[in-house]
Structure formats: structure tokens, C-alpha cells
Length: 207
Image (cartoon, rainbow, N blue to C red; front, side, top):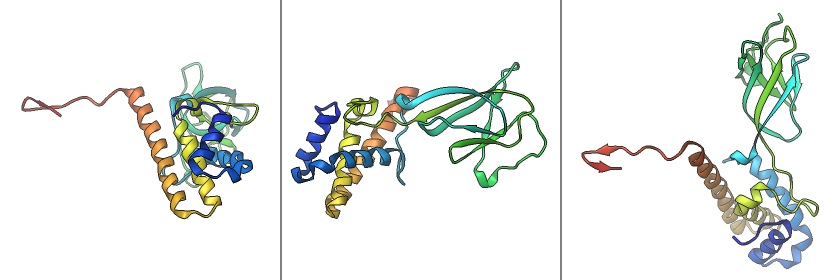
């Protein structure tokens, strides 16, 4: 697809939809597509360009998450003995220890990480997480998602457009294309991270 910035994306959306009359709504459809990338009931976007690491000090049982946090990849304590990774538990399964000590488990409540116990000292907490890309706008014309996976933006915005215009058939069509684009991006990223699956030879045949 031969477009790589916010202005070109808006023109493509108009061209694909044949709805020049909705031009003033296009930025809203793009915003809805961005939200859907990270929040839908089929497959969310998780690619390497979204990964980042942050460190902070534990001062209590709760630690604020970064503003661009989408989902956690790993959480660990860095201490003199190298600490260790904390295990995730769902909020309703978290077993809270009233006594202090080095945390072993964490959960996420709203915009905070919660430990299973109050840390007995100040620890360095390292959080490796998926972050949301900087939203597109008139002052931010591109980001890594648009540059590498433009179809996600295009089909997501078209899905929102046809939902707005009550064209159910087209809305379903572009929602499916949107999800397929996300799955394709995730699959390609996973392959690039771990390499292709090893071939297995059966009676001289490679499968």
C-alpha cells in the first residue's frame, strides 16, 4: 500500500469508501481504529516495535504503570542477588500476604501494579511491556504501526466508517480484513523473533 502518513491515510480511506461526504469524520474513524488495535475480542496487536522497558523504585504495595502501557510482557525485581521474575495472578486470584517481604506475585488493577505483599525494602522494579503507538494527528503524521502495517489502519478506519454509516455488510467485511491484518502482523513478528519452525524429515521427505 503506497501511503505512509496521516494525510495520505485519510485520502485512502475516502477513496476506498467512496464517501467524500464523511471527510470531517475521518480523523474520528482513525482514532477508533487505533483503539480497536489494542482492544477487541478477537486479536490485539502485539509486535516488537511496541515493546519497551521501564524501571522504577517500589515504595509500597502499588506502582503506577506508564501512561502508554498496553499489556505486560514481564515484571521482575532487580536486587543484589539479581532478584527474579514475578508471577502474574488475576486480581480475583491474588493471595495477599499481610506480612511484608519480597513480592512474589503481581496483578494489575486499573493503572497500577499491585504486589501480593508490601515490599520489605526499596526494590528496583523492571517492567517490560507493550506500549501503544503515538496516536496519529495533524502534529504526528506517522508512527511505527502505520509505517510497517498500514493495512491495519486502513481497514480499521473503514470498519468504523461503515459502522457509522450503518452499512453492515461492508462493516463486517472490513472488520474481518482488519483482524486478519493484525493476525498477519503478529504472525510475521513472531516468526521474525523466533525464526521459522524446524523442518521434520519423514522417510526422506521434508515437510
